[in-house]
Length: 464
Image (cartoon, rainbow, N blue to C red; front, side, top):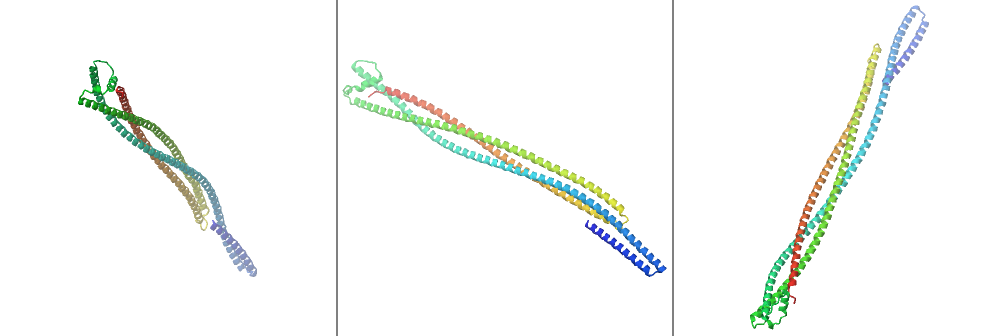
């Protein structure tokens, strides 16, 4: 465009210079004609003047035609420039719209980043809670191990007590046999006494023992050393039997005290086991509730983000398609107008000295405009593709996070199943403890029966 303006100015200056030279030549010819008034010279001067004037007029006409062509080129270039400015304004508006959309997308991406950070924070909190629950579970397992150790100690004490009770029962059976033999001996001596006194009375066994014990020694002296030795031996044996009976009764009392202590410990263990069972069940239910709550929140958040990102991608693709369509629609009229202008310019400039100069300049401007438009289109497409790739990367990251959350949920589910298995094991051990308690109660009932037998034996024993 600057070259066209310079050519136009140079042509105008050339036309003015030629007109000035023509005027100078006319003046020179007039002066020559006035100086040399001959007829031949005047005709030659006039002919030369006409030839020069015709040449100058021809050159002036050529220059005017070139000036008109340059003016038309200038008008065409101004129209193309206005069209280029109009397209530039349209592209600027599209660029502003895309920039606004990009700002909105950046805000949405920041919001999604905030949501993802919040989801990560919630996930970290859930992991911390799971670790706390695991620590509580480990402490409960430690307490349960301590309880098992205590139960083992109590079982060993119970077995020891059972062994002592078995020995006491064997001793008691032996003492019962000895008491029966002693009863026979007492009955025999009482029969001998009644036979010697020639009187028979039907009295109780305690009265018989009391009567024999209150008799004097002279009454039972038969001037036989063997009989007195036998009686003294029998008395010593009776005394040892009484001492052994007292020892057995004291052992039975100790066994009852131990049994009561074991019952209290078993009751305390049952209460603690019930409390631990409640604590474990509450912890499991709380873990289930937190797990379901976090799973619902994470799935809903991931679904919303996926749908939103999908809508953003669809919107970006639609904008790219619309931009391609509008760019093609804008380029087609420009090409048609340019072709028509080139044809019109070729028709009007066929008689000029350089007819191919203007179409070349116009084609060069058109190529610059098309290359500028294509550059803007490629930049917009590259930016849209970058945004699409960023959205796909964000979607893949969210899918990875979803996979990680699913793995965490599977680990929590596995831990819950392990807790349920432990709870089942604790329940089985509780059933075993209850069965052992029933066995202890049965043995306690047997000990009570033995105590009743001992009380009956005390009632039958002679008073000193």
